[in-house]
Amino acid sequence: MILSSQDTESIPDRLVTPEIEETEIDMDINLRPQTLFDFVGQEKIKEPLSISIEAAKGRNEAMEHVLLYGNPGLGKTTLASIIASEMGVKIKTTAGPALERVGDLAAILTNLGRGDILFIDEIHRMNKTIEEVLYSAMEDYALDLIVGKGPAARTLRMPLERFTLIGATTKMNLLSGPLRDRFGHVYHLEFYEPEDMEKIVHRNARLLEVTIEDEAANLIAGRARRTPRIANRLLKRVRDYAEVKHDGTISIEAATKALTMLLIDEHGLDEVDRKILKTIINAFKGGPVGLNTLAAATAEEMETIETIYEPYLIQIGMLERTPRGRKATARAQEHFNTIAQAQSALL
Image (cartoon, rainbow, N blue to C red; front, side):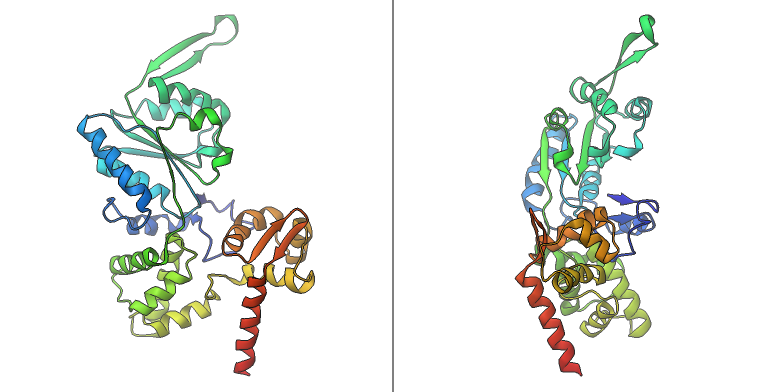
């Protein structure tokens, strides 16, 4: 998911948000792997995807339509680009909200060549009228358009080249059944394993032409929320710190000081994450507390808490959603007790 400046007006700058901001797109592209061989992790997806690509190439056919779903920052856009590269075809990229009229979709589809790929990010946010037009394009490789109005209106069928639609979504439940059923391949991208995260940090350090120690790579990987996009962002910030405050090499000392300065703790929590948990623990005795009340107490918007902050806190077992509201878990309490003890030891 790409966040525009309008989307982020109510969200403070966060190093650990998995969404990509417009200012990061160019750098993000430079770090993306270009082949399945270079793509680290997601082993359950890579093998069947590789077989499907080879089979389609062997038959000289377009691939079946592909649906990729999972949290932001896990590689859906990267995989779409890799599929196009491996198939040797062109890719046209757009987003669900950007397709406002049927004419927008028609203009894109009629310009696709045989076997080309149309990648639609945030496909769950696509206009329902456009979605219905897309059905015939996906199944019959034709566009059914209504020309004229009233009694003079008629249906026009426009043939299309056989193409592959790759849809990406972070909210599978918001996709309609008829649209889901038209995808031949459906892949779920999961959070990355720690060893894969470390490989990604090492690989991207080489691309950034910076030397990094194994311990430092492990530290950055461990605080990146098992998400490559966050790892890339932290790596670039630590690199800057190492170049200015050290000799340019990312050592464990430089990485530790940089991440401490950035207020990213060992669980990948930033200042806002900790504020939400501490508010529940201190002001509401651990909860439960209603989302509306929590938003007022932390001066954050309800939607921001629910969609930006909560998912990771729930994933790592520090926050719990109950019918009566949000609760901080014993693990969250233990985390803050550890922080308090460490601070006391320094005094």
